[in-house]
Image 1 (cartoon, one colour):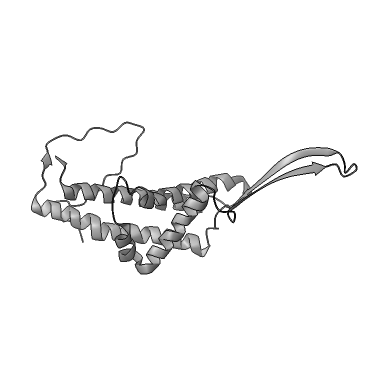
Image 2 (spheres, one colour):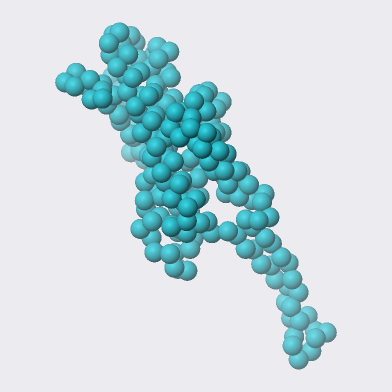
Length: 202
């Protein structure tokens, strides 16, 4: 049975966020396992940017999800959750997504002249210097990792499991229909929110 009721719709939106937070968690874990050497700079940067973009969907996917994230942020971490969320979203907007912050990226165009003939132009060059992100041990990255885990756990305990139990207790309503198989190129995360054997387990 595919559920179409309002609670199921809201549950699906929260589950979509939960999947994004799982993605962030897994990407940060992978980044921590990639050695911080020059040869891995782009790999590590891609992982960091993937994490912040996935996290950022929480704040920029409001047209589709239409959820109040402030309540979740406060329930998980109090006012610090709200503050740190703003820090992460600024990082996303000002650097990762749009490269707006001069603190995080500088570009210099320069002319190089021959040392032995200072009037002879040798080359024109450009230097682009972008922040590589905080080291794994930085307080910001440690807090980012903990922030995501706490949000994910709170989301499960206060939004997903209770709504799943509510639907199960009340009796689901929807359309009898088999789930369609997903295309091979898609990643699917399935959550069991309420099994008959032990309910939510909470």
